[in-house]
Length: 74
View (spheres, rainbow, N blue to C red):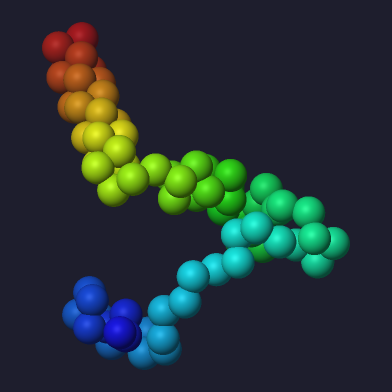
């Protein structure tokens, strides 16, 4: 499936592929990608089931909503 079919964008027309999150050139697990992405966080999230991921994200959204309300009432 092509990226533009998923999000409706014509910017990227190549095939999607999963990045290699586990190996660097010396066969040790990498902590950051070349662009600075924390690969340990990606590995942790991928290790969760889809329902666990949704629960984690919902908790994050709830925390952000609470922070917004606290900021407005301060």
